[in-house]
Length: 150
Image 1 (tube, rainbow, N blue to C red):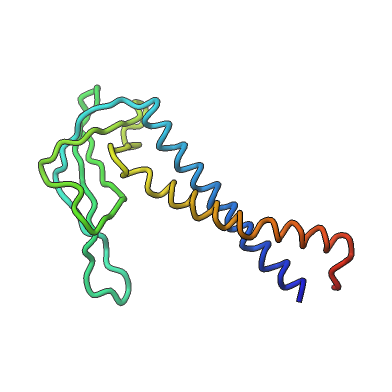
Image 2 (image 1 turned 135 degrees about the vertical axis):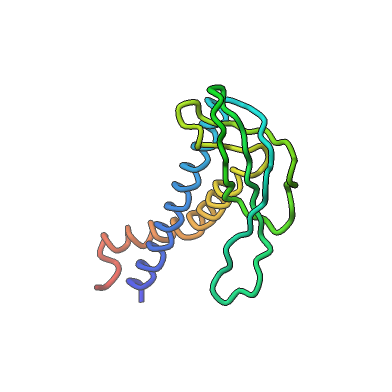
């Protein structure tokens, strides 16, 4: 029974740590774009619907498509990957954009757009880690001390 607990708590601890790592990685990516990127204005040219999932009747989630120009006069079309059920953006709306000069496809939009994923993963990973890791560590120490029967 204790071995099953050990496996259970270890798996969820590792999953929590992976969520934390992904959250940190995605947060640093957004931070890097805002810190080192070039700020410009973009225009929402369209909203596209999230593809429907299996057995879903309708999809009411939309994400903006934004067109902007780089300092090198390149026109870039950015397809956001943040879908929401409420319209944060409207066609024709001007938005602040940050892009990396060496890779203008790496974009961050103003607002919560690029922070939703990192914060979700961070919060979920932190909760899982705080709940499962202490018990997993305790069970691992007991296992290696020989207190858990094989």
